[in-house]
Length: 335
Ligand code: NCD
Image (cartoon, rainbow, N blue to C red):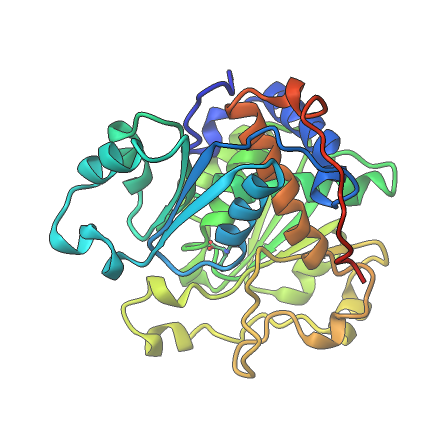
């Protein structure tokens, strides 16, 4: 794909080659994300960061990524505080807001709403999660994390063995990641969920058609065996008709240090898109895993900034100018 001025609406837009190029840019920008270097390459540019569903990591990391490239961020959060509440169409909102921004990130509770919004936008739009449908930038940062965690053991994404656990029906991060894995070779995917929350069939079919081995079960301990990556997810409570219904499934697949040690290979890496639900009736990833060096959830969240910087720099076509606009760092914030 051509990144320049592109909307990022679905992970299906990407080919393997564009992922390679994006990850190369991400590696190049990592020192800027870590404040070892600084650039003002996007000084003057405005990101419209519009989040109409709860978000911490995605919203703040999009904003921080834009700031780290020197750009400015304008935010709207919550449908209740926007004119969508007054009946304004997504098209009109997009037409107006794209006059105020150079690029827009958007999260919205309805599937395909971000694509509808993009039709009215005069600037590139990035999908920050459209209901249960997709979360393409999370899949990119997840794959970037998988790649770097595997590289430490001389492994590549081809040949990956991954267990995806939890609410696979509603989890948009799992949907986008499953699609993305179809671009790679010889992957084993173990899908562990309650039967009612299984990965949608069309996604299982895509994985099988890509030549991957897919195992479906509701047996956590078996699912954890013989995998490189455990990708745990939370029950997506907000997609159920009531919290009572969500409660039926909460807490079924809990991973803690004892279960990890008993079932996982020593190099197995634990990932989660976050937030992990740490309430006692859920607790899909126990806090007793925190000292475990194989727990990659915070490295994964840090990678969100790096990958989002790479997307902004590629879409706005400034990768080649990043070094030219370098600036000194004159503060001390790291401990
Ligand atoms: C995920 C999401 O919003 O889909 N969070 C995120 O963006 N990192 C996962 C979730 O909310 O469970």
